[in-house]
Image (tube, rainbow, N blue to C red; front, side):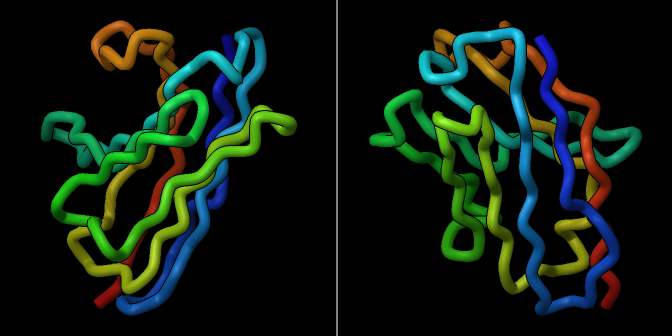
Length: 118
């Protein structure tokens, strides 16, 4: 299983970024997909998730209203649109894939760095 995250970078506060995660080696359409983030020295935290059929979407309170998770099963890709970025959104963003929705059992990609300057 490979999950290739991209789209991170340096952006000013208030700006936007769109993260992408391309998946291979798994049946993408059967997996719940999620975005998590981690600052070095801290625990990985949940950002957003989307069910296999896109019906259910969940967001952390810290990003609700500013981020939108979506997926394209034809392209085996999940996205995270992030708007109104804040300095505290600075982190390494990881995408995960889980058949069960239990993220402790997920596959993880290598992460993409998002840096928000204030």
